[in-house]
Amino acid sequence: MTGPTESEPTGSEPTGSEPTIEARGLVKRFGRTTALDGLDLDVMPRQVVAVLGPNGAGKTTFVRSVATLVKPDAGVLRVAGHDVRRDPRAVRRAIGLAGQFASVEPAMTGRENLELVARLYGQSARAARAAATAVLESFGLTDVAGRLVRTYSGGMRRKLDLGASMVSAPRLLLLDEPTTGLDPRARLDLWDAIDGLVERGTDVLLTTQYLDEAERLAGHIVIIDHGRAVAAGSPAELKRRVGGNVLEVHVRDEADLAAVAAVLARAGHEPQIDAAVRRVSAGVGDAGTVHALVDGLRAAEAAGVTVADIGVRGPSLDEVFLALTGKASPAEAPAETSTDV
Amino acid sequence: MTVSATAGGRGAGLPMGTFLVAKRAVLTFLRTPQLVIVGTVQLVGFLVTFRYVFGGAFGTYKGLDYVDFAVPGFIAAGVPFTLIGTAVVMAEDLHTGFVDRLRSLPSPSAAVLTGRVLADTAVLAWSLAIAALVGFGIGFRPHGTALAALAAFGLCLVFGLAFSWVFITLGLLARNGQAAQGLSLLVFPVTFGSSAYVPVDTMPGWLRAFAENQPMTWMADAVRALTLGDHAVHVLGHDAGYFVPRALAWCAVIMVVFAGLAVAVFRRG
Image (tube, rainbow over the protein chains, first blue to last red):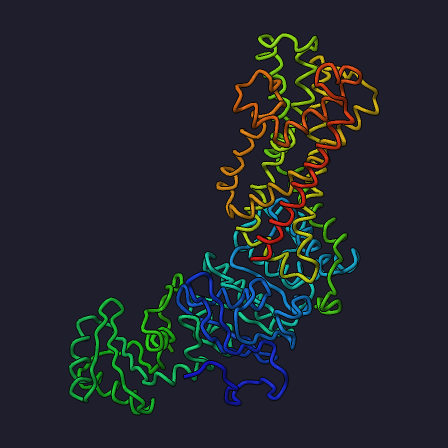
């Protein structure tokens, strides 16, 4: 299992062009802690890559290395074709960074914050004003542009922070846990904002603790643990690797659960009952979807019960994560209720 | 969307970067009432308290009113007190990622520091000007020329350049606001263990040995000598021509050492 992949031609990435990020055997130590331990990772043009891993896996150190904020001890790290150690300034011209906190100035207005960053990128006052206007508009902040940021909500600050990383239209956007600490509504908003950037052709490297976030935003996921890439691929590929579909039968009446489970057991499955959601589920291996569904319906018919919903789903990324790192998923996604296919 | 036309800025130069970072710091100061109040009232409070609480007990020193002895010393010692905020802000900027944001931009990272120094100088000029006005209000009068008095004021701003680097270093080392505030308590021994508030010849030998050989004493006496005119030699033993170059030499040493330290800590990331 190695990290970097020239993933199978499912996506729309053009192959053969120079990677936006190329990391080979990247090592970074802080005292006795090894944050990155030979990390290999590629981001190709037109790709959105999510780096997923438990706390302390090295996600933030990797992003900070790409952003030229920490110098790797060993290995190769090239961003937009430039070596981060030899030519950090060229790297900085190609990137926009939004770190773990909304690093905007509370005592300045939204517009002032954006113009400050734009001017530090070297834009003229006029160009900075235009860039700020465009960013405010695309993030839906035009109405609050003139208000001091200290009056903004957490979600608005994050959007502004994201906007600040976009004012120079960088080729690569680095997002370190962009939605940590946001309420579900603000998360959805921010996801939409990121989608918009991707549509306009920005490459994105994001770290996240939320599996649903990685799946929602990224076409390519790299799972890292102990400073190394342990798996990489599209969400579908990663799930396939763990294998095994799950049949789920929801019934109207809780009393019917046992009957459905009994019939499924007789058909050779190992059903589990979740009474709280009136659901019987069973791993059906790689059996065809239709085959599994038929089994479920037969079970219901035999038991003489009314089926509320029936479906077969692939494994969740949580299950993938558990299988690959031996740890439960690093954080529960906020307010998640199961909405299976 | 039209965000793309200006893609890949080449990065502002150091002077522009310094100006932009300083502008942000000054705006923050002006728009945060607590900062304005502290920056304006702190020195004034000190000044008035000492003038009326301790002034009576002090009487005169070598024929000089305490107010004329103390006000120049207060203003000189007010420089490090005013700049404590720099350590706190620097630590917080580091903590919240603001410094990371600036360092990830293509403008020179040094602007984060030089911009802070520039902003400090502006805020310091404001605070010291208020303190000087209040000093006049409570009876202080310079004995030398107006030009010498202006030079004394300018000299305090030069001290500010040196102390600004000290507090930037403390802030970078502390990494959070509270720790920075704690480290800044070092200001107390440095200012009170000097000639800023009282003449060192009233101190016990060990303290006097410390006070006579530390920069704050040279700075306070340099400012004082500039405001005493012909009285300087009688009161302080030497005139301004003796104290000022030594105070400036201390500033240069402090600046070189702490600017070097600050940059080293900053680069470490």
